[in-house]
Length: 49
Image: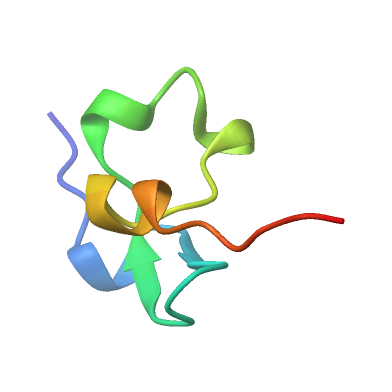
C-alpha cells in the first residue's frame, strides 16, 4: 500500500480565521464544500449581507 506524506495532502485557507488546514479522511467525499477548519470557526462564520 502506498503511503502519502502529510506535506503532500491538499490544503485550504479557513474563511473565518484565515489559517491553513489540511485534508482529512472524513472530508474525503465533501472536500469541495469544506470552508472552515473547525466547528468553532463554522459557528463564528462571518455575517453575510
